Image (cartoon, rainbow over all chains, first blue to last red; front, side):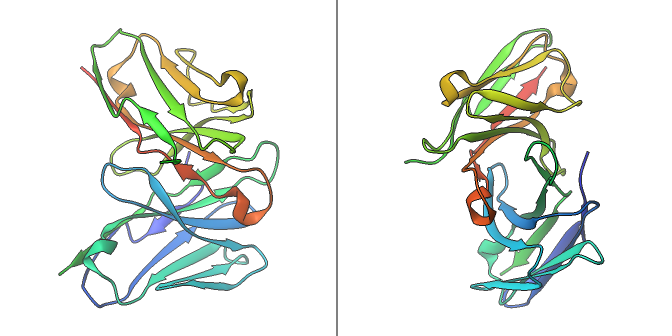
Length: 112
Length: 116
């Protein structure tokens, strides 16, 4: 079953606008990761934020983490048509074996 | 190219047939994962290897599914007596073992299975 859910399920914006997507998760975590998936392809790692961090930046990406609310957000600034993809958050389990649980994803469409 | 490689990219089979997929991880990665993804959903965990040891298997995986990773290198996922509900994208991922950034997953392009 999914660990959490992304919100919104789908998002359509114009090129140059910012895109914000949210992720909620259920259990305690050591870190949270965001991945991107282009249609019909595998996932690509974007950014990792540790549980003791509140915000992290990488290029046009900004991730925040609120462990008290068990939520994270991904902001893509100045979006481009090439950012059109599905975005997933993933959390590794902290007990037993180390597996990653993915959310349901946000499908982003950036219109040129 | 030293990324994760999956074969075949597409597989069409008839219900009741057996299929086998192969995954070649990044060579120095000791962790290997199999996931299944259906349209509009996130990847669902199937099983996980550390070196050659299969450490966890999802309850989603029926007895018709089996995975191996001989010698801790490539891995195979076999589905016996396929059913239409097995139609999905099967994703393989690998990672290093360790803290934080070393644990990010590298995915292959997946094998798209269609059961007719």
